[in-house]
Image 1 (spheres, rainbow, N blue to C red):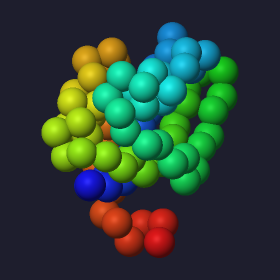
Image 2 (cartoon, one colour):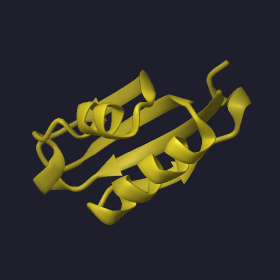
Image 3 (tube, rainbow, N blue to C red):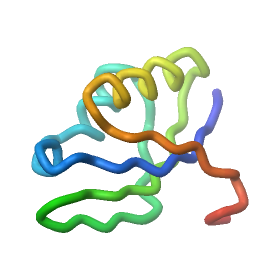
Length: 79
């Protein structure tokens, strides 16, 4: 089982959508929100994802395909 720490930036049109829930269900990954800042125009989330390496990769690709900016973070940023 792998873990990945990412910083997600959501465009305004996705702020009210259950994107993290959808990714967790669709790709069988476990999300752990480490930090979040959501305004009316943008949402930013630091998220730890755990799961099978292939599922993590597919989850990241899915997020990018729907317009979420995904930036990998080093493990020591929050720990």
